[in-house]
Amino acid sequence: MSNVPILSAHHLFKTFTLGGDSLAVLKGASLDLLAGKTVALMGASGTGKSTLLHLLGLLDSPDQGTILLDGKEVQNLSQSASSKLRAEKVGFVFQQFQLLPELSAFENVLMPRRLARGSWWNRRKQEQERAKEALESVGLGNRAKHRPTQLSGGEQQRVAIARALISQPALLLADEPTGNLDAQTGDEILQLLLQLAREQGAACLLATHSAAVAAQCDSTFILKNGELHPAP
Image (cartoon, rainbow, N blue to C red; front, side, top):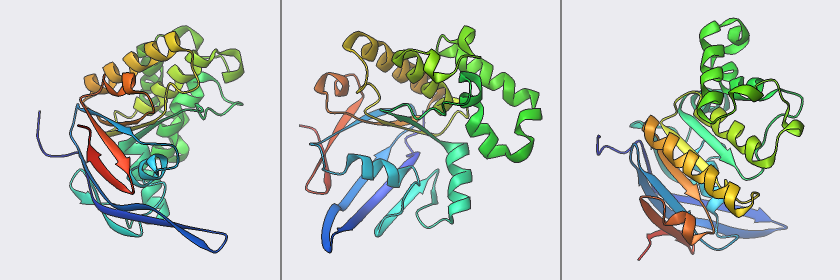
């Protein structure tokens, strides 16, 4: 497997203005993510873990610094270009699942392909087959027609994982993916997420408060005072 990073972030700065006050969240954070490797991101609440994930996933832009995805600078892309690149190369798994309640599990999983392919998405048999295979890979092939309200929390997160991985993204970002699940279900979801990410060769960054979760990743970084440090 190549040692060339899938993603390289260099000296990222991000400041927010709240009520006239400035809050510097990131102060030169740098990170490399390799294909097939999972990195845990730890840090106290409010230190900027979600902010960093949003920058790396092109949901926001840094005030300073560079982000290279597959060797290309992406931090200054237009909104439309960022959206297309996210749909093709980035997968997200959130704590709150973020499934669309009016859509079935199958339709939720297919959504990134719709964003990537445009208005003809639902006429592409190949894309629909990918969604079916993605659901089967998380053990929910028989729940394709169910809506989120008809699924348990663990099943909803499995759908979210299938949605994140349907495009075989180069980069997978997970923000407290087991935070809303009981311990047993959370461990099952974690094992599934790590297994599928490694099988697909995705570079994975997983934000967590849990040392036990972090211990199952290949390495751990701690975000403190706006900077990233390898865990001792």
